[in-house]
Image 1 (tube, rainbow, N blue to C red):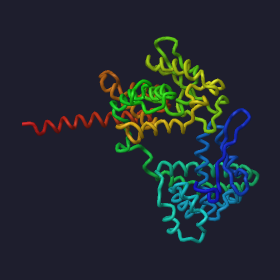
Image 2: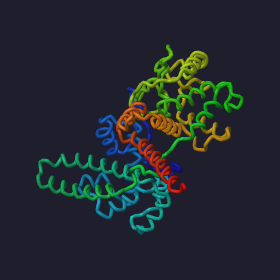
Image 3: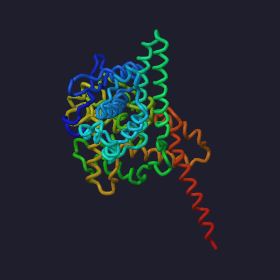
Image 4: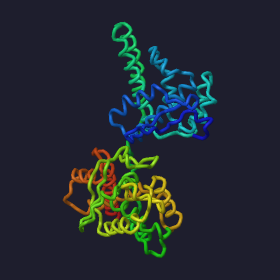
Length: 421
């Protein structure tokens, strides 16, 4: 999205009276949301309880569809109304188009014409290619959008059997071809070589040591040291996401006894949250224990520091900006990690909250490995609860990493045995 001149499609956020945020896809030329897209997003997606950020990502997929349609002079709404669905060549073209980075597609869209040679077009937008999983998601969202609109149009033809049958046959033929192309996209599953690993446990220990408020090499200014140390400890101890950290209320922390806990809640469209970009939790609610030291830090932060910040008195969130006291933003978390990476030797260049989440899972796997009486099924069940995942598949990713590690160790012992005298 390089300039306003080229970015003629834009997603804007609308805030409803109840505090709910709703993304809408606009054409800059008219200043109005695209009616068919808004209809689909509200009637078919929002009613299913989709999170605002999910709706936003789905609209980005539809941006790709409309950029493609505009460059090919295809009127999507007219095609749906008249039952002239995408042709085979158009579907193939659209599938290839969905490989492009959105910024590249927007920047190049004004240069494309219907009579441009197809191969020339491909070289234009394939200079950078998105991952197969994103390409498939885009096409799946586009399919869902077209399916919903055409189902609505089909329902208006029920009084005319012949028209209904003709429209339905054309509709099914189009989606049958599109489905085959979506199904053929490979690479979505996580390969053994793609399994991400966290940082070395010693680096995590060093991170917590050097960010302690009284450490002489602490890279942060004194007024934010305790808060930042608390942030790093919560990430390291709980393996939570940025959004989960920033959604914690003060009242979510129970530190009245030795067994302190933090409750992770899902609060979509929280009316207490004044942030423009609200952190949205993807995971399930859960109660997690915290260490005694972290309980002490929470108490000290809330009583001695947060209580003195003016804006902090207006909202319930635990982690705030300094000195304003406003709820901390997602970008501020990124800046804290960026500052640490630039000032402390030995800290990986890619250190981030998500990398610490991987480190937490590595530590969990190592602890499981040290116990001989825990089955893989129990490991998945425990990891699911602690991470807030709803399916076994995500937890199984880390189990595959454990299997890889164990099998490699076994292979190494076997190889060592082959060369012994």
